[in-house]
Length: 329
Image (tube, rainbow, N blue to C red; front, side, top):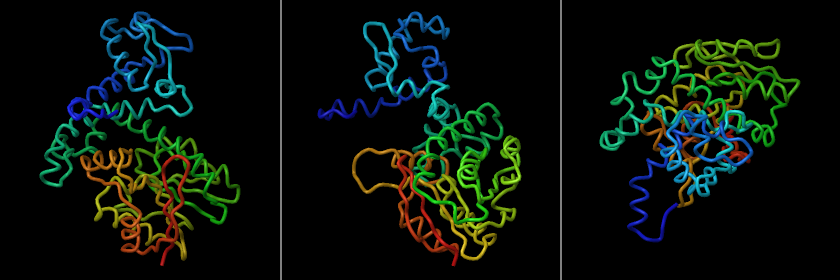
């Protein structure tokens, strides 16, 4: 929320991370889960969540100015934003908010200046093994990260199924698909399709319960192992994790495994052309710190062309993410 007063605007921007940290903290503490449908005094919420009443009151008063909770003289009520911090909300963003508050992500953001100076991921400076090494070495952080990615995917799936027809494919491979929520939904909605989930062995181990005669689970590394043969490949928010060189390698691995005329579907948030604040442009700086990048349609088309695919179309979904379709050439 930027003021028309330039001094006020700079003050808000320079200290805006305190708003983020307040949001991280209440998500971590489960404040939204403790608040039911009825208004509650902050003192009661503090008792339930083992917080200091005065400190919690001040934090909730701040967040209410951004639409997260409604605050009136020490009494708190849910808003649409705060309800999405509940773990039981069908579109819960609690894990995603907690993820951005993890010590590893916070340390990485704190080294942003090094990424600006060098062009190298600041995570490599802040964390042993970068962000992926941090997640491998911290099971609790990895669990929160996995829950965040699953929750984010769930928010996109209905929109993807609404705008894209998967019925023309025999076998669809979901590469880097985590716990398999997208491919499972595609298979469930498209009776003639068989699916393959491909991700790192430790990731797909948790997805084995979803295996069936129509959904196969395969563990591997897309930089070193051959990918499953399929008629279509879905990569949802995978390529944005990597720089151009690594992205070409991933797409080339898909091309080597692909059947003739196979389709590649990159599902990504495209950088918009408008000049106002927007999530993809913010996310691009997150990706700068960990080694990836958000891209525009032309950049994705170039990556796919360099790796054996030709762009055919871009399909927008209702959830702000695009399906970038290409065909093997």
